[in-house]
Amino acid sequence: MSALLDSYADVAGADVVQHLRQLAAPLRGLKIVNINSTRAGGGVAEILHKLVPLMQALELDVRWEVITGGGAFYQCTKAMHNALQGQPAPLSEALLRAYEQTNADNAETLAPVLRDADVVFIHDPQPAALLRYLGERKGKWIWRCHIDASHPQRSVWRYLREFIADYDASVFSLADFARPLPHPVYLVPPSIDPLSEKNRDLPAWQVTEACHRHQVDSERPLMLQVSRFDRFKDPLGVIAAYRLARQFMPALQLVLAGGSADDDPEGAAVLEEVHAAAAGDDDIKVLLLPSDAHLTINALQRAGQFVLQKSLREGFGLTVTEAMWKGKPVIGGDTGGIRLQVINHHTGFLVSTPEGAALRVRYLHQRGDIAAEMGAKAREFVRENFLITRQLRDYLTLVTSVLHAREGRLELS
Ligand code: UDP
Image 1 (cartoon, rainbow, N blue to C red):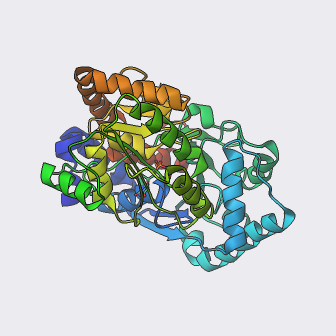
Image 2 (cartoon, protein in one colour):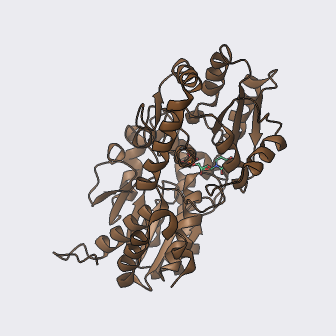
């Protein structure tokens, strides 16, 4: 019996852990490989760091490999990412050739692992062409899309679809994002690990200490957004909302905490824009955190009274789940996966403009009693829907289903 798995019984329920063991038993020893394009930064890496050890604890033979590429490759995949999220993105022939060549090179390097795998999860567009260049394969291949692909630029989707059509199944985070594909499409929302450094309970002194370390006054109200510096996260909109909210709450401070991701070449430019917009206001702290600053983020999410995730597009928004788990009613952009989590007026507020965000800040400020009620609901909503144990259950069910797709009947326990 794995102690790691048992530790989840307290928070998710003993029956949930027992169910995971039942689902995993027939899959024991199965070789599963996950491939993405970065080990640090962003939600995909965040989840894989937790999911892989848990699957190993269930005696599955799980590996996580990361593809590597050069500047042109990441420029191309960032443009693809933006285009899938609906933004016109220039994709020259040269960039597409870099994408194909990088996938071909990585397919060759990873061939011994990939050819032998029973199930391969390919995360997002970056490694999506590996299958094409691998040639022969034994296992089932699943494309796992973490982004909001509901309104993609058509030409880019048409290009990627050629590669993805070869897969045995695809997984999207919510129904709105799913694309028509010639194979079964599954819906699995992401999740957080309640026992990780980022989400476990913290004593009050650690929260205060983190505030002091970053020159945040723990006695004054704090507005927070944790995000990579990415235009879709709308950091400038958050600054605009803060400025409006300051008019009725002069003591308000703002923290924009973010880091860079290895596969995101635009981060530095956006960070510069943020610094320029924040210049001259000492109550705005722009924190560029290292990728392992989980405790700091945990503490800031607990310290913030007004947690924003004012994204303009969002695949899911793990930062929303993380803050909700800490009892915060999140003020989130009315888009993508945020809508799955923020139930307007119940677990938080959905907003479309800086003005809307500032109004909700004012409401939460004036109605502390309702803010506390909404925060408690938010935490329960995450416990029921967005803990890692639920995602693990979904993946085990998915693997079982993909492996037995041709059989007429499936016994899950
Ligand atoms: N994150 C982090 N450091 C940062 C910024 C973000 O560790 O400086 C984490 C954040 O806590 C969350 C993940 O990275 O767990 C971001 O996932 P999300 O789905 O919110 O956005 P993505 O970056 O995948 O678009």
